[in-house]
Length: 71
Image (tube, rainbow, N blue to C red):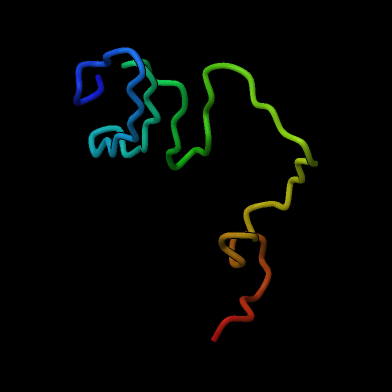
């Protein structure tokens, strides 16, 4: 629950250590979550561009078997 009790018009990002997640709250309701699995969204996602699956190597080059170019 949002720290302000979820009153209408409230927006909060909650750092949830127990769930090991960031929870996005609107009016006391969780609408999205980011955790180790990825991004989960309760309803629709709107976008104006393209969504491209770049694989885990974008964040962790070793995950794709690619070598890091960062020294």
